[in-house]
Amino acid sequence: MSNVHELNYLKDQVQELKDQGVYRVLPVLEGANEAEIILNGQSVINLSSNNYLGFASHPRLKEAAIKAVEKYGVGSGAVRTIIGNMDIHEELEVKLAAFKREEAVMVFQSGFNCNAGAIQAITNKGDLIISDELNHASIIDGVRLSRADKAVFKHSDMEDLVRVLEEKRSNYTNCLIITDGVFSMDGDLAKLPEMVEIAEKYNCMTYVDDAHGSGVLGENGRGTVDHFGLHGRIDFTIGTLSKAIGVIGGYVAGNKVMKEWLLHRGRPLLFSTSLPPAAVGAIMEAVDLLSSTTEYTDRLWSNAKFFKAELGKLGYNIGNSETPITPVIIGDEAKTVAFSKRMLEKGVFVSAIIFPTVPKGKGRVRCMVTAGHTEEQLSRAVKVFEEVGKEMGIL
Image (cartoon, rainbow, N blue to C red; front, side, top):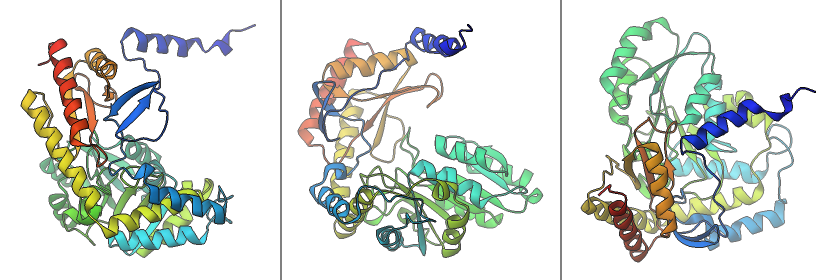
């Protein structure tokens, strides 16, 4: 009998990961995703969470989720176009549109689903998509699903964007320029004001994935578009509901016709069950919280500034981050993994980010400071960074 079922080709590839020192085993979190956690049975300071505002375990969100379950059950039972569209889904979209200062919002089951569903729905054969080279994996996959032609411009390089447009724009019907609002590996911001000027000059639409800007930048966390005052000039804004908002899901914000079209052509909406009631209830509570106070965003930024300053004093290369995302760039892949492992042994969980997520030789640990951290916790983490940096000859 053939040994095809052994999947030997995968075994070989897994062995290769082990040989390269980049094989990983999933960490197991016991309890809520907070500033200090129990991970694999050990108490550690958590610097790896996207739970920017501490909302994932906020009492008000938990209460709202429970109330929604009691009224609507645990699942919606269908896709939205059949019978999975509950009044709370509609209410959430109205609330998010008002918060984002946009005409309309279409909610998807995840941020990844937004990019997988929206990009292929709003472009077609004969169109051109131009994408920043450091855009998130979900944008890259979303672009692959489109029938449009594709081009890439150098990261945040507006001259290169103009070069691509000069070469190609006249050959296409519609042109869509796509960028992250905040780049998740380096924490830098897209040059949105310049990009919008260029897009308008060349008659292009703009599409911003604001996963790491939602709840972090702009007035009360309204995001990168709000931060730059570009309402009405960005055609499609993607927001996530799983990071600062603390739950799960994503949305596309824009004008009413965008929403009408996505209801007919956004494939994850048409072929995947809608968000569960508990998530919707909690998200609405999160938006209410954000709208009513800047307490959480203020604390997030204050913690981030403190942490960056302390790491900077030690002499680490923390890149050019303009947001709470703080990369500590180590370089070599195996050394980065070993650094992360040693940090964990000493009570700080900070995950290693290596190729293919970032370019070869640019391995880093990515520190995610949140509003939930205390200064004392961050100081303890910095002390461990100092100890491990010296021990490994990085400092």
